[in-house]
Each structure stands twice: as C-alpha cells, then as structure tokens.
Image (cartoon, rainbow, N blue to C red; front, side, top):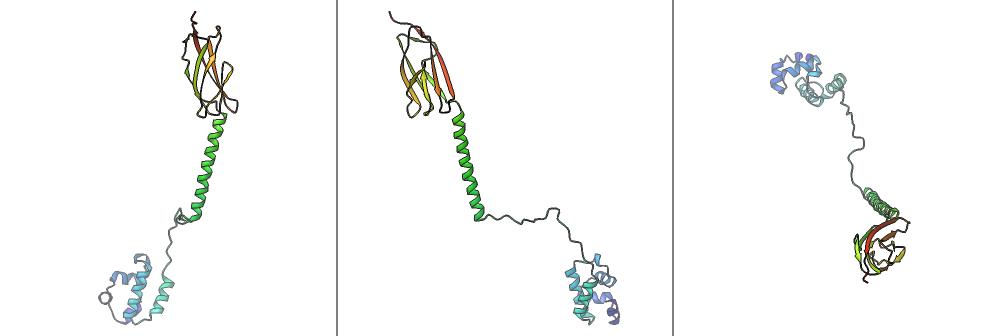
Length: 202
C-alpha cells in the first residue's frame, strides 16, 4: 500500500484530503499496526477506498488484508445462554395443569388423612362446670364432628348431620360428674368431664 502511494507520488496529507481517511490511519495501515485501527469492517472499507485511489485491484487488496489482519479473540461468556430464552408453550400449560391438579389432590388427601387420624373436636355447652341439678336428669348439649360417635356416661347419644347432639341424661343420686366422650372413625377419642352439684327437691 505504501509502495502504491509513493508510485503515485501522493503524500499522506493528499490521500487524507481525497479519501477523508485520517493520515494516522493510513500510516497504521502501511505499517501493519492493526491494533491501533478500528474494527475489521471499517479497515476493509479503508482498503477498498485506498485501492481505488492507488489504482489497485480491490479483490487483491482485500485478500491481502484478510491474510495480514490478525484474528481477534472473542470474549467468552462465563455463563453462556445455552438454553436460550424460555417460551411458554401448550406443553408447559398442560404440565402445569397436571402439577396443579396433583397438588390439589394430594392436599385434599393429606387433609382427609390428618382429619382421620386426629381426635374429633368436642364442645360441651351444657352442663356448665359445677352446675346445680335439681332432678335425676341433666341436660347434655354439645357439638362434635358429624362422623363421630358420642357417649355420655357410657350412654350413646345420637349426632345430627351437623355434628350437634343433645339429650336429657338420666343420673342417680350418687352421680357427681358427667363424662362426654367423642370417638372418631379411626378410634381416636376426645373427652370432657363436668362436675355437677345434685340438689334434689324433697
């Protein structure tokens, strides 16, 4: 390139004026100082422009540039994006649906199992603790699980569909306590005991 310029008897200032390429870049090209030049596509454009000014064959000068221009090391990403960008697909929707249904079913089964192995709930509204009873009958009123069975002093009590129960329990003069026991289907028990104060009318 330098030889072609000198044969044309062109100074670098003259070439700069004709091509609008900075003379510093022209000097770097002639000396092969590629590291001080812009990127390869820009340098390739410089070479083609200079080839026209120097009456050189563009293809030949381009081939010489490819031969002499050193390859640049490409930066390697420490975390290359191998998988690419995730795109939600019908298959993903189908799998998500299966997962959601599975979680719901497992949650329901887990809830039912926990309920099965847990003692039944039991609330006793009557009698109150140390309630005064003036006859040989005491009113029992409470709430439990609908599928539980209830006994009051070992006497069965019917449970309605909402889990409520009530009975006028017969007692003796020696009775000082009532015991209410709820038993679940799995055999788990919950018991409440209430003391009563029996005062019969003479």
